[in-house]
Figure 1 (cartoon, rainbow, N blue to C red):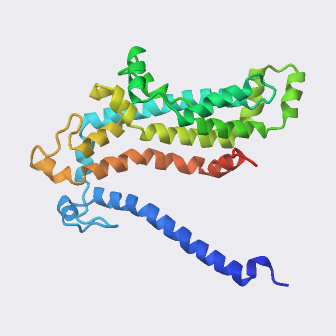
Figure 2: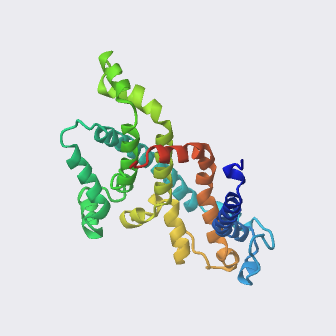
Length: 291
């Protein structure tokens, strides 16, 4: 008897699947490898179009140029602070809201879900949001970045579905033993939800780390900018606190300084991701909407 894995069709499928996935990996990695190669290459080699996957005219000069700019490190520190604070607040609010929505006996549950889903398709608009943030006195503060995006409805629904899969008998037994609602959440539910929590932390952290438009919109002081705005200003040709192209030294690094800044910006995320990757698929699948 021929097993399913050894049938000709199955073998063809596995070969085609491997080829397609390998192609996807190569297409995904190529831009990043090219950026790294540019960051380590001589400016003239980049201008001549000689840099592809390997550095040409290997140099760390541009890294030294960026590292010597105090504005870059100030903005980098801001990004770390904004990401940590925003992720912590977002996780607290999303977890509490999702836990409440997971209770089918809750009165008004359908309305609360509808309110959340409504915001996925409709928003107040850019100008009303700007007027609101300004009216609340949150311009040029961390709260202008943290609070408006504190809850992602997609993450909320994933966590809600995950919590609904936890056996109700566990919570009922804890309640019979005299444990409060907050005690059940902290001592029963959250320890069983490490996978989805790690996944949501990753989603929120990446989102806040890469975000630049709220800071660009609500921040007017350069020492409050995150590093993504610093990078945006480089790309736009007007850096914050550094005038690229002003002299010969700047001209030397003008071509690959953006590549160096990109590499330094994504390094923390690349460093953290391997530690939460093992929870990623499990958290998304367990919290996925089931038919």
